[in-house]
Length: 320
Image 1: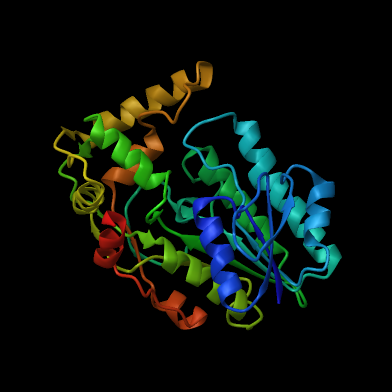
Image 2: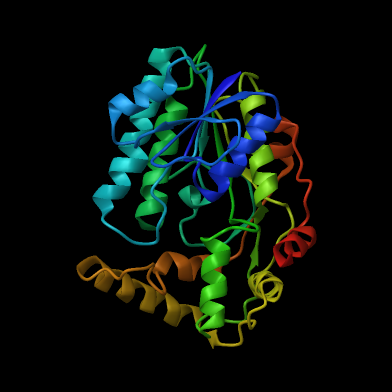
């Protein structure tokens, strides 16, 4: 197939575009700057430009949509404009262009309301209950994408969880930076079990969803994708820090205090935003102090997919 991958200049987007190419498909990418993916044809533009989106879907048979505004803070209108309106523009343009398959790359945060998720499946996205502007707008985007599922236009939502690996400037980069400065706390004891997903596994799951999208048992559904190896937060942070050669976290902060502080930081950030991500938000405090790991049986059965890189192997690759 000729496949459009949006957001292919990002960490997961570039790996996904390469995985789609390696699976034998013709890849077109769409983002603000060249993707750097060998063999791909770049179309430059933004999700907020309907004309550019229309150009990107010309002659395309399938779409894997990763482009999004990803941040812990920012103008709520920007999240809505990119994540919700941009997804609606892309869905409408894809349907008009005769695209047959659409994979919406979402996030488990669209169904995380601040309490523990223990062995959970992909429960429905909830814009009302999701925490933070990113999660709320991704939830709305997932719902509108899945609502477009119809004969001849198969839509699947994939929710990779805490994607990490070499070259990651988001999760790994920020963990390393804060650890190096002695500002990486463990909330409570750091014992909350969390799932994560090594980047190559996440990319291969996108390919599986793309190739299985037309199956009646698959389209119209959402799937959480993880390594299926839940570990305590403290263990995962310790592994990433050791692999990156920085001090492991030793500071412990009560989770309740972190949630209050996060709420205060968010309020200040709305008035006087900093140049980088806020040091703490309520959403981040909840993510670091509540269990969130997922039942992968339906994902692996329906997508006929399984991870090939374990967490320990991923940490070894991170260490180089």
